[in-house]
Structures are given as C-alpha cells and as structure tokens.
View 1 (tube, rainbow, N blue to C red):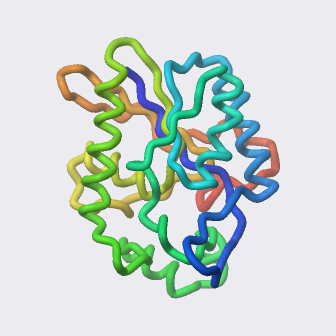
View 2: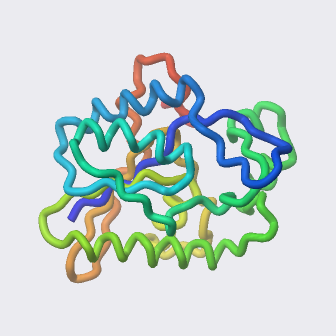
View 3: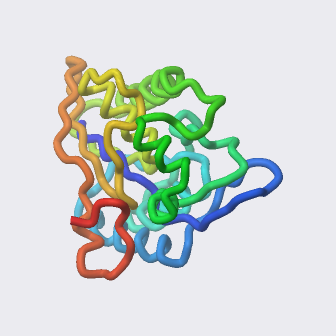
Amino acid sequence: MELLLIRHALPVRREGVEGPADPELAEAGHEQAGHLARYLASEPLTAIYSSPMHRARQTAEPVAASQELPLQIEEGVAEYDRHHNEYVPVEELKAANDPRWQTMLAGQLHVPDVDPYEFRSRVVATIEGIVERHPGRTKVAIVCHGGVIAGYLSHILGLDDPTGFFYPNYTSIHRVAAARSGERSILTINETAHLRGTGLPVGLFTG
C-alpha cells in the first residue's frame, strides 16, 4: 500500500493559555488546506486519518470532503506538544532567533517532559496499525504533525534521532510504500508542489 503522511497547514500563534494551546488554522492555513485537497483530488484514497488536534483536523477536512470519505481520528498520531500551553510557528521562532529555535537546531524537543523515544515508539506502533488495516493496493493518508512524520521516517531509515533529522513544510506530503513483507520504502519527502505560485507560506524551506 501507499501511505501519505501529510503535515498540517499553518496554525495561529497561541501562548500563555490555560490548558493545551491546540491552535486552529490561520487564514493562510485554510487556503493551504484547500490547495492540498485540490492537488490530491486526482488520487483516489482508500481512507483518510487525522490527528485529533485542531490544526490537523482542519487540514484534513477539505481532503476528506473532496474524496467523499469519512475522516477517522487517530489519537496515536497527535504531536508531542499536545498538552503544551503554547504554540509558535517555527518560522517565527527562527526569525526571532528564539532559544526554542536553537533547541530545535540541536535536535531536541522543546517540550521538556516528553521522552522522544517513547514518542516515536507510539507513533510507529500507531502508523503500523493503520498500515495493517489497509493491505493490498490501497492509498491511505494520515494528516498529522512534523514530529510524527520525522519520527516515523527516522524509524524507517534506522536513525537514532527520533524527531529532528529534518523539517516537514506545511501541508507537505511524504509518501511511503509499505509492503506486506514488512519492507518500508520512502518514495518522496516534502512534496509541496500544490503551494508553488500561490504566495502562501510554505515553511522553512521554500525551494
């Protein structure tokens, strides 16, 4: 089967809230999600899953509607900052040379109470469970988060770095071929052709 791991679109900045920040999409994020849905319209999906977090669900909803599929919520692909009380788009951290950006450059999570290896184990188990549910010549999309995508791909590559070896752009698509034999092959990383020429933010890497 072909697995599409898709990062959510651009969310709003949210800091200093009581309880989890869990931001919704910014206006530009909704536009990104619309372009994503149109880009995937020619690729019939077997199923579409989403993280329970607002930014992922709102990104997935236009895709599910375009494909006329129910959106299935999967708790196991929530981001590592799910319970954190702030969310700042990483581009803003970089522009301000925020200490949290330096932490990310060092390959570390900026949520100190999260074990990155436990996080990756949860992500891998969840995604592999989805793969097992859809054997054969199927195409399944999971709309989730940068840490989730990096964690799963680092597992496939056998890397020790559980979350930070690369940065997925907004609404980027990462394709994995999953064979019944257990073999996993990365087909593409950071597909963002649907955002070219739109004037919308892409992420850290716009090429």
